[in-house]
Amino acid sequence: MTNMINILLVDDQNLIRQGLKALLELEADLQIVGEAENGQVAIDLVPALQPNVVLMDIRMPVMDGVMATKEICQRFPQVNILILTTFDDDAYVSTAIGHGAKGYLLKDTPSEEIAAAIRAVDRGYTHLAPGMMAKVMAGRATEAEVVLPVELQELTPRELEVLKLIAAGANNKEIAQQLYISEGTVKNHVTNLLSRLNLRDRTQAAILAKTYLSI
Image: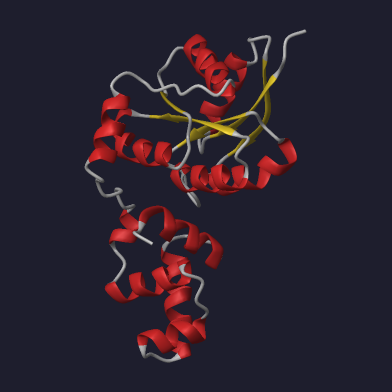
């Protein structure tokens, strides 16, 4: 009997998810057990669905594929992540692979090749699109900086300080003491940060900071 490979599809575009599901379920050994429209939903679904492979998009609202990859690989090391992306996401892909993703595919890859890559990463192999290995290795060799999302680039120096301290586990009182500002000011900074970065809570802020900032 063929061992089924359970797959979680993560992409913010419903049309792409439906198309992938229709194509992949033509394969006898592949089964779509769930879908997620962003990285946070994917993280929430993994414990219940227990997928073997997560097919992960990079650019999504709420939480992108880089942050979600880091979190899933840390919390659920038995789950293999295969990045599904576009050519201009190379820098993000390199970061995601550094966080534990097992492979990288372009969105225009033929379905039979996607199926083959899913089987490969399920068996523990790495699958990279042509030319990506050189970019990944070059990025590691030069310790290139992670490409910051636009929202992070637009934060003020003070907001970045607060974000880094949140990531370090400091509460509002501790942040106020370290930065010599009032707790009320810290609270305002935290509220503004969560709003500007479209984050739900301090935990998501900490994950984002640890993913993209040198912490």
